[in-house]
Length: 122
Image (cartoon, rainbow, N blue to C red; front, side, top):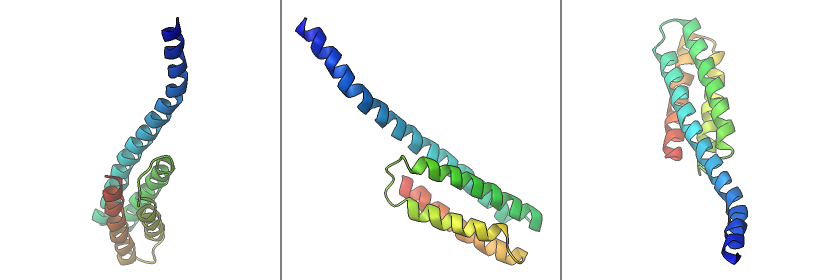
């Protein structure tokens, strides 16, 4: 009887801890997955030979990194917030550049920050 009670007590104590760890792991996995989308869209923006396509893919990259930052808030990725912030800042500038060259410049800067973000998450 005591063993059953002890097992029941342990399950109530450990279950919330396990659920929290699982959620953090899921958030980290989602953050890494979304970061690959961020990078993919940024690279497509950089490869674009059309101003409209460049800004379109930079905008898609920005939307993906905003989603990634939501997952990072629940993930213990030390050093990931600064590159995410810098990438966001660069992508915002890449979306509304004065010309094609400026858009490419900020997209390149964003890719550097996205690479740093990926390293921080690993």
